Every structure is written in C-alpha cells, then in structure tokens.
Length: 313
Image 1 (cartoon, rainbow, N blue to C red):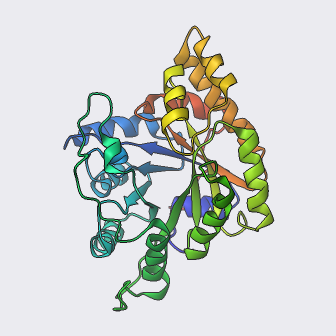
Image 2 (cartoon, one colour; image 1 turned 45 degrees about the horizontal axis):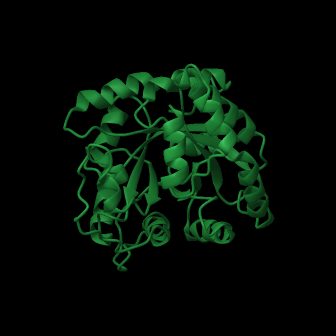
C-alpha cells in the first residue's frame, strides 16, 4: 500500500467507491465543519475538502481536513497551484501527513477572477502563483513519497505515505486533447482521478472508450464527478460558464418543468450515478453537493450505494 488510506484500501479490493465534496466555511467556525460531517457520515468512503474553491477565501483545506479526521471521516485534502509555490506546497504536505492526512488531490485552482460572483466580491486583483502546474504538482508529491526527495533534490527523512489524486475534465475544450492530458497526469504519478461533473453520459462514455484504448483506467482509478443540481438555473449556469460541464438541453428542460426542482435534482443525480456506473473502467463516483451536503444521505441510499464497505482500521 502507498498510503494505507481507506480510499486506497477499498479501491485495491475492487470496491465501487464513493467520495463526496465538502466546502469549508468562510469563517473560523469549526462547528460548521462538524455540522457537515453529521450529514455526510456513512454516505461515502472519503470526503474532499476544497481549497478556496472559486478563489473565495475559506477555512484552509489542511485545517478543515484535520477537523474532518477528528470527526471520524477520512479527508481528501485538495491543494491548488494558484495560491502556493513549490516550497509552501511541500511544507503543507509534510504537515498534513504528520497530522494523519493520507489522500491529496492536486489541482490548478480556479482563476481569482471567478471569485467575484453573485453577492461576493472575492479577490479579483489578487496575484496568482502557478509556480507549478497540476501535472508537475502530482510528480512532486510522487517524488516525495517514492524517492524520498524534495523537488529541489534534497533528501526527505522518513516516509511520506500519500494516495495521490488528480482532476480530469473529459469534456472540456479542446476535447481531442483530454485523454492525452489524462495520460500525462497518470504518468506523473496520479493514483486516482476525479472528473469534472458529468451530465452528458453518452459523450463521456465515448471519451472513456478512448481512455480504455490507451489502457489508462488500468493504471489509475477513475471516479466520475456528479454535481447535484438544485434548479434549472443552476444547470444553465454550469452549461454556460463552468469549463467542461456540458448539460444536455433535455435535462435543463426536464428540470424547468419539474414542480419540485430540488427533488428532481436528487432524482437526476441518482440516475446519473446508475448510468455512469455501467461504463467500463469507472471505479467509483465523486459526488459534489455544492453546499447541499444534507442531500447526500438520500442520494447514496436511492443510488444503492449503502451501506458503505468496511476497511481495515
């Protein structure tokens, strides 16, 4: 085992795994994390803790991951290249591992201009870092773990047990390069992949066929992203503004005509999970409630994902 994490154990046993996303609060309120863990406990195998998603300042992913651990849930700490250089990222990883975190998802991070949305002001004038891209971020963590070396070449004392993840946007433009980019992340050392939210299952199945032709699902576990929709407006926004999210018109129309759009959103998420699970090479799903963590129990139950399997301590 590379890390011994619950997520790694279940994937190595061939279980169909479930991860769910949790957004830390825009405050120092640890109780907000505890409240979310109460909704999420037992609904998934591990829980992604976002890292200042949409470039809005929130409690740090590292601190929220530790709170998640203390609540008895296994975190997947997310780390973006936008806010840290290679020195800060390696330092945070050493601290995270020392505190018991075993999963890390490497991400580029949303551009700071994304933070100015709705009533939020964000920090559109902030300087980004991008000392590394997400592929080299994955390579850096693999080197820490497997070669016991920092990126600069200095030795690392002791073990750095990590299960390393990367993100994949299979339907982002230009689509013809998406499988190539996935291959680069896996070659750099990604153990598992979580995709952008999938609504167009037919097109995603076509991309997965190309990934299988390259033998990529055999080298890293691919978890398909499921973003729980709450309204027709949310689907329209994602289709128009979120890179790589493609929502078929018939799905937007279905949601628009629903009397109870939240209930319909849960039904859509359940259907997506069932349909995507049939695609060869998919090893699990990554569910993103987007501040609607209370919907997770119903989705996991209705999709037939409960109870979650046990892992060694």
